[in-house]
Image (cartoon, rainbow, N blue to C red; front, side, top):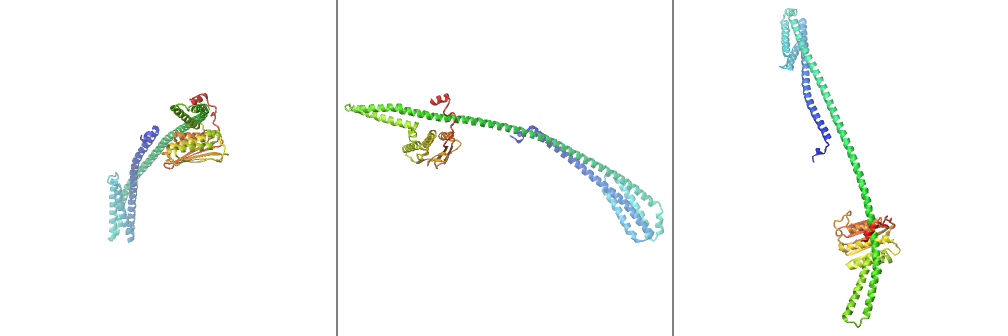
Amino acid sequence: MAWYEAVPPRVLLALVLTAVVSVLVFAVSELAYSDISDNRIESQRAAQAQAYVLRVREQVLAAESSQRGYLITQEDRYLAPYDKAVSAARSAQSSLLSTLGDQSPLRKDAVQLGTLLEQKLDELNVSLHMARDRQPGMALATLHTDVGLHLMAQIAMTSRKLDDELGRQFTGRSETLTRLFQQQRWGVGLVVFLNMAFLAILGTIMVRNFHEREQSRRRLKEHAEQLETAVAERTEELSALSTYLQSNAERERSSLARDLHDEFGAILTSAKLDVAWLQGNASMSPVPVQERLVQLSGALDEAVNLKRRVIENLRPSLLDHLGLAAAIQWHVQEACDRADIACDVVMPDESLQVPPHIAIDLFRLVQEALNNTVKYAQARVFEVILEQRGGDYVLCMKDDGIGIAQFQPDHLTHGLAGMQHRVRALQGHFTVQTAPGQGTRIEAVIPMVPPVTPGADAPPATASSEAGK
């Protein structure tokens, strides 16, 4: 998915319009800059030409003044200013022509001014040479002719004409520059206004989108909270149901153990007594009959032992008669002997009284942990430690087996999950520590007076019937 596909169409349109307007204004600004540069150059050229025209006229007057001073006084100090003024006038005339160029409409008048300038300078030079040749009278006589006056009038008229035309050109160029600057200013203002408008639209859209996203995020959060609440309620319901099922199963086991002990035990005892009577009164019976009676007696003994083991698995009689410590000690010792595993059981003294509903859960924890060790751990030693720590019962079970491969605390196996549920149902804390080749350590910390789960002792009839099945 391209990045522009994730941008809202209105935002993308505002960005495109802003870019187009900016490009157009840049192009217009470049064209205006070119016109401004051309007009600035022309205005500077007109101003320079005006200055050269004024300099030509000034230097002609300076040359004429120096020439007349020499003719009147015959002092050489007037010659240096004269020569300087003549050189400056001719330089100004050359610069004027160079500034105007060949294509200027005023070049004809500038050339005419140069012609008049040379004529005036020739007229001044003639008088000056006469004075140098010792003909001061003739030189002064030239001053009374109208030639010099006429030339100066023509120079003044031509220079004024050039000055006026150049002034009009300078004024026109200045006005054009002012107009171009004004247009550029309006153009920049228009661009700024349009960009601000587009940015305002873009900002409005972004604020609206942000508000919509915030509302969506809030709705999602509320929905997630509702789901979490529903999950918590369902989890609590399932936990309560599971706790009830475990409690009900324990009651069913206890009831079944009593029935087996009372009824099935009585039957087996009666049969055992009958077989013993038959054995005592069958000394004269054939050998096969005696052998069959011996086999029947052995079968009855095995049935009695099986009945005892089943009863103990269903409901340890030691738990009810001798307490939790003795029940755990007997069960661990017997199971480890059958599996050829060494065991180490550390129990508290007999003064520790454990409530029956906690004692049966602690016993089942030991039973499940030992069962897992025998089946999967390949362990050599199994240890059980039960102690009272503050206001808690602490049960620790560990082995030196192969550990649990790829263990994930959040995804426990069914056996460990059942143990965890037993502990949590008693408001306790359950931890498992394991690593490949380093064995497994399970610890359950259960409060001495855990709160009773509501409904555990008064389940609905449907749950009871299903549990009975």
